[in-house]
Image (cartoon, rainbow, N blue to C red; front, side, top):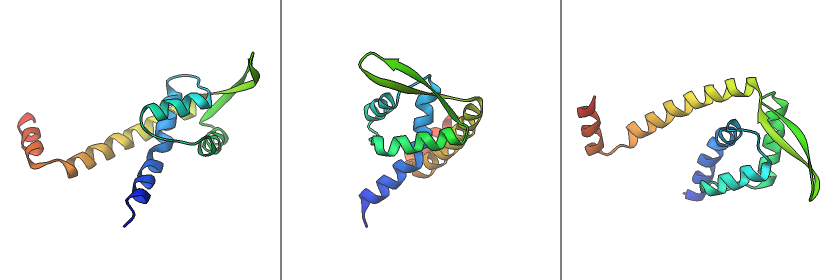
Length: 119
């Protein structure tokens, strides 16, 4: 069994949610998204990011604006639309439910006993 393939598939499954989480915090330039993902130990290539941003924009979840740059061509900054914020809320709810379920299934017996005592 190829563990790297499984790990890659798990990361791909949360990639969109992570990117939207970053953009939800405020207007962002794509290289800033790459930097924040790397800081969180989630690697993403620009070749993966740009098509995803384009798809999210085409779905009406993101919009962008061009900002002139003193050091090169204009930069495209992305921000979330109202539709994107609503979509993000649904993803966040799903993520929390999924994370709780995975935690419940992977918790050690001692963790479960402590959890049951706290309820």
